[in-house]
Length: 500
Image (cartoon, rainbow, N blue to C red; front, top):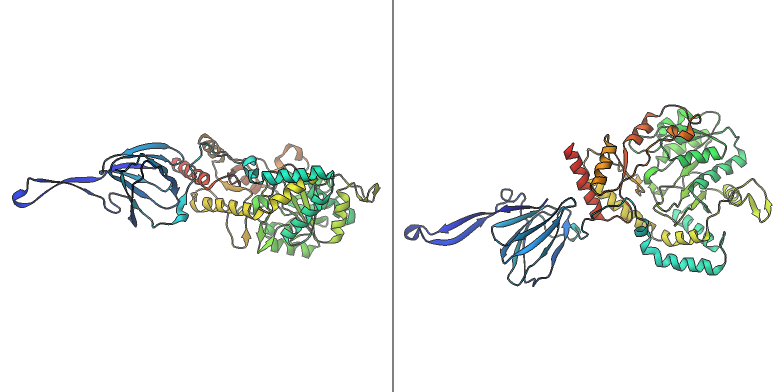
């Protein structure tokens, strides 16, 4: 927080016969004594002629500002408190911390500002955006604003084509998305839940008895469980690794029975599961792997994108996803043509040819308009992921270690659909952040086995899942969030720990 201090100032006099004759004033600033840092850079600002200066904050740099001539006003905002200071005397010094966004006004032709800096000049150390008064968790208008003109053009194209179901836009997006993943065959479907369900129905139609078991993490979103139940199969819950929130490969083998037919790893929050041991277990036991990639668009494990490890990869393009449509949408990635043909028919009433039905299918077709929108946004997916990774890096480097942060590992390329931290006082922390103008979310407040709809269906105790759901908190990390907003979140959260 900015702080105004008085500089040690002395009246100087001559020695000897003229000892009583005043010679002016001497002001002294010493490194790490009068100012709390070592000065590495000194510069002057003058001749501004009332032009506003500043308009930024820093990542590392601390500064001491002294008005050696004239006067000026400085407005500061550290994300929590706003202040205005007037400097008009050379014995006043305003200390600025890196978090202090500031702007200077009132500098005229007589004003001379002396700046003492803790760091050498580095353009990457500057943050121009001022702290907002309120930080949203998500703003889909802002997320999609840069794509609006292309969306409108695409909508007009579809409208004018007169072709609205399983047309060229769907075909184009399917090809583009499988090219992006560099593996498999893509089929657009209505939503992420259907992508999972259709993958299971394809297996069931091939060779999977109705009482077959599917292994799934105990802390997943309810859609994963619903897909298994909707396919007439039995979900078997396996606890997650408490450090990654993904299914713990060391706990899978003990849940495998003669009825086990598939493993459904969920790449939660944008981090890939540990796929090497999962694939080995599946191979050793003759199990199919269906990846739930609803939150992992572009995430990688050892350089390979999620959705391409297993027999199926199921994606959701719900609007809040890193690759989000403007409504519901989904896709299935199939490893081989047998699965591809089966899903292609099942999504369209079980039909390959109009009015001829080979299977008992469903209606789950990706909409032409949404496919067009997704083609537009897919071109920017890597940029979206890079932005979210940059925001995550700010959290990782600056957030107090008293909060349990996501682990970072070179084998994993995380895309941070969600930046989830854990804290024992989660509910209190959530309220504190809201009181300070920061919205958060909880993914998820209740584990599947505790849901009312799952009573009598999901049995057993899952203490790790319960611990995660009791302590997890999702922080702002939207494509619409700025670096300045994330620094404010960090500063406010670290003050919460100081209050503890």
